[in-house]
Amino acid sequence: ETVMTQTPLSLSVTPGQPASLSCKSSQSLLHSDGKTYLHWYLQKPGQPPQLLIYEVSNRFSGVPDRFSGSGSGTDFTLTISRVEAEDVGVYYCMQSINLPTLTFGGGTKVEIK
Amino acid sequence: VRLAESGGDVVQPGRSLRLSCAASGFNFHNYAMNWIRQAPGKGLEWVALITYDGSNDYYTDSVKGRFTISRDNFKDTLFLQMDSLRVEDTAVYYCARELSGYTPAYWGQGTLVTVSS
Image 1 (cartoon, rainbow over the protein chains, first blue to last red):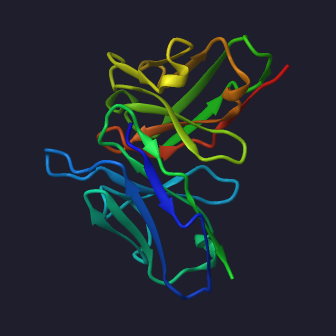
Image 2: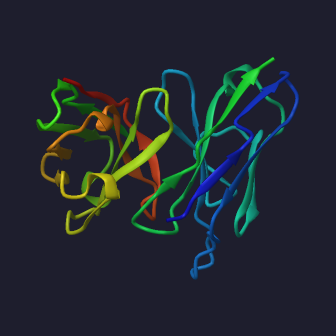
Image 3: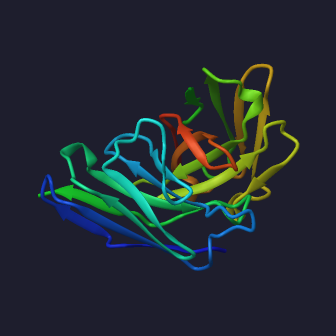
């Protein structure tokens, strides 16, 4: 089983400041097809999760460009260039290389100072 | 894309429950579908997946042999039959449509299942 580890557990950010969230996998998420199957979700309070970034760095439809993803192999980062109040919630990374089993990280909670 | 789960309830351990997910706004029969759950105050856990045509289904280890995912491509509906329910199955259950490669992209609002004596 691929284990996904997210750090930090929580993050308090001043509006307008950047935020960086880390996700590490227990094995490489690089597939033989050349794609890396690491995705990021945001779950705002009281809402279902929403897809932000798929395959490391592709923003999903409607996602603001202040969100960006990077990384390779086993180490990945979600960056919010300028945090806004609406960005509060729990961010999850997820791997889909070991299909059909999908596994999520434990989440990083982002709060506004 | 719209996904609407239903069927959540309070049930005793050992009983059964069937969840439904009504899909609209896309060609349901073209996409794989997932069930993902979230226990109260906890993180996300993938539960089950079914391919676009229903020919293959997959489960997380903790529900194998107890849960069955299925779909009706004529009625654009996804199902999760849950048997031998346990207290630890208590969660909000979400259905989610894939973007591609089974990656969940579109999620419903969820339905709450509570297993308690």
